Amino acid sequence: MRYRLTKSKFIMGLQCEKALYLDIYKPQLAFHSQETLARFRKGRHFESKIKSMFPGGIDISMELRGAVQRYPELTARMLCEPGAVTLFEAGFQYDEVLVLADVVQKAADGTIKIFEIKNSQTIKEVIRHDVCLQHYVIGNSLPQLSEKSDKALVLKSFDIIYNDGNDQPLYEELLSEAKAAEPLIARQVAHFKEMLQGMEPNVTTGSHCHMPYECPYQRYCEGKATAQTDLSF
Image 1 (cartoon, rainbow, N blue to C red):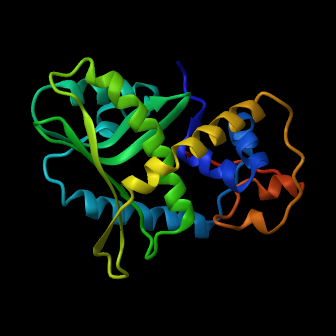
Image 2: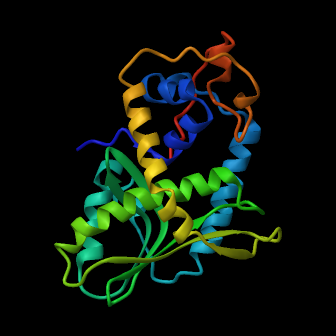
């Protein structure tokens, strides 16, 4: 089944349903400011530094490059093989939602630890939503993968790794919170998929255009359409 939503699109929908609609149907209209692009670069730098703390990790994105639709297949194959493995950008798909997990560690006994890396000095609400969506997708994917594995794959922990302000890692465990949010996430996913079957939502500009992130479609809504590269995920 082809995915329709990703982490970035889900978070965008929480901020503005019109932005999500445009990101699905008119992504060429997105505009990312230099400040936003700089934030992306800083985030990738911090992420790379943290990933270096997990030696021997296999980067799915390096194996498959832009073939994102194949990430779940390769991830499943590697997780189902006997023994321990660490994966970067591991792909999971459920309910027409695709998520890429920053770091997935599978121990030889089948227990799995997940680490989401954020270049933030606080655990903001939007980050919690991100983790809850990942848990919804990954948690519901693992039982199917377990049927192909020599040992049951069990999600043991889900940590956020964030920035202490000096590019050093801080950790917070969010597994219990993510489990509790699963019914809400399921309803939100269903709502977005239903919304995307209709017409473009009529949403006026406002403070939501800037919080929690600068909306890449604000210029379109203001009648100043432009185009830039899609930066999903």
